[in-house]
Amino acid sequence: GKLFCLLRSSVVFIQQPHDLVVVAGQPVTLPCSITGYHGTVLWVKDGLALGVNRDMSGYPRYDVIGDHSKGEYHLLIQRTELTDDGSFECQAIQAATRSRPARLTVLVPPDDPVIIGAPVVSLRAGDSLNLTCHAENAKPAASIIWIRNGEVLNGAAYTKTLLRDGRRESTVSTLHISSSNIETGQQITCRASNKAAPNGKEATVTIDIQHFPLVNLSVEPQPVLEGNLVKFHCAAKANPPVTHYRWAKGGNMITDATGDTYEVLVDHSFFTEPVSCEVTNALGSTNISRNVDVYFGPRLAAEPQSLQVDRGSDAVFSCAWIGNPSLTIVWMKRGHGVVLSNENTLTLKGVRQEDAGKYVCRAVVPRVGVGEKEVMLTVNGPPSISSTQTQQALYGEKGQIKCFIRSTPPPDRIAWSWKETVLESGTSGRYTVETVSTEDGVISTLTMSNIVPADFQTIYNCTAWNSFGSDTEIIRLKEQGNNQFTPDKQAPDRDYAHLRSVSGCLMIPAVLCSPQGLCAWPSSLGLQWELSWLSSSSLGPWGLSAALDCRGVSELIVSTETETQRRLAPHVH
Image 1: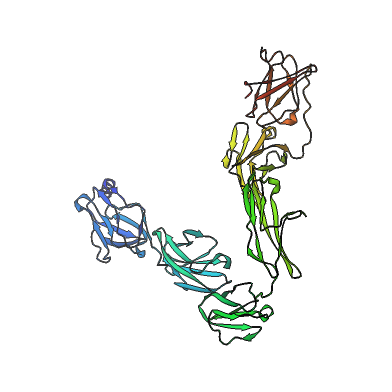
Image 2: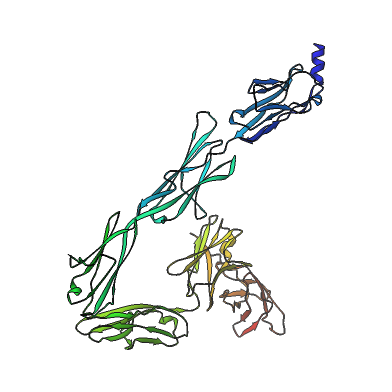
């Protein structure tokens, strides 16, 4: 008993196995070094002995390595397999002692992923696409992502199944893509990865969208006088390819036309009996028909183009019609009855922003018909801001103020400013600026999280610039549901001090000040001001200084019942 206790107390594990993670197929070494011991060493896995000392004959991939004289009994596992996954101990038998248990975790990469239907998946135009990708035999289960044009596609359904060995798993991912979001020839990749294969393995499928023939039937020249040669061209795109063409006139087959082109000398019947082209592929047929305008009313020869010009520049529209007999051209602005020109060209000199709008080029063929073409004139100028000057929010909640800008060209820059802060986009503290373009203009929104009382005392400036100038709107935030104002503080003597911003920053209607330097103003203005009297030879006895939160104020006005003085105040900042 004494010998056993002495032996056990002198045995010390210099190295013990510790938890390890290894990818299947790689070697791994579990360390075990014992000092003061020369007895039998046993390796145990999941409670079962593997072999004594260095004898691992029952496990050909297992070796005990190290210097025996130094007490080294390291377990080397060659080409780890999933069966090696488990708990290992190194035991000193005569000393009746063992190392701490060590968990060996064996990871297994997934098999190469497989996309059902690959390498090419065909579908009809208008049908949605469903892709399924399998990644088998992975530990842990593989994660699957879908990639198109370098971007990850979201919304795939994901399932995994534990295999019979209780360790590996198989993963299936199904991706649904609507018909409006796919194009023929696109390649979509399934990438499967786990800890054993962090870079992933890929499979790719090519999308083949099949459709009925898409047909465009052209007639040249058009319009045409009776007796002239007309060429019909039936241009078609089809997948699968076109197999044959068929031509008809007024429902009657044209037997001498078999290709994509038909030429003929026209007579008056072509005006009422349309020529049709039917194109066929393996999916079906598409039929399209056209009339030939032999005797015709007004037809455009040169289509007028919409214009976008700078304010003060000239705008020149050109419009040409053809008809039989001869025609008359009239230019007018839509909604106005004034004839602007009877020529092919309409010239507007030095346009203003109010000249913007729709203009109509109208052609009249007597006793035949009337034709017209509308174009748009857009005039570039400075932005115009229209927003509610007082907007509401709830104390303690998230609040927003919005600024609506009409601008042609679009604004180059939109900025919100308040106190000493200027923010064009993104987030600064509690404030976030977001800008959204609409058909009518641009909406810039300043969002404030967790509204505090000071927010109701702040003036917010929304300013927009483009290459033609700028516009600014002052917006205040009002506490929602509170329509009361704090009564004005009354000063003994009523001298009126007015501050006005030359830059358009703000306007204070009335400030009451006493000769002792006490001033008051309506608290509903929501401003932080400090005013005091000055003694200044340049300003006289009515001098006044101010420290204020709004930048750009550069003019000071002070008035009494008998006189008014106005001075530039460089100390106002």
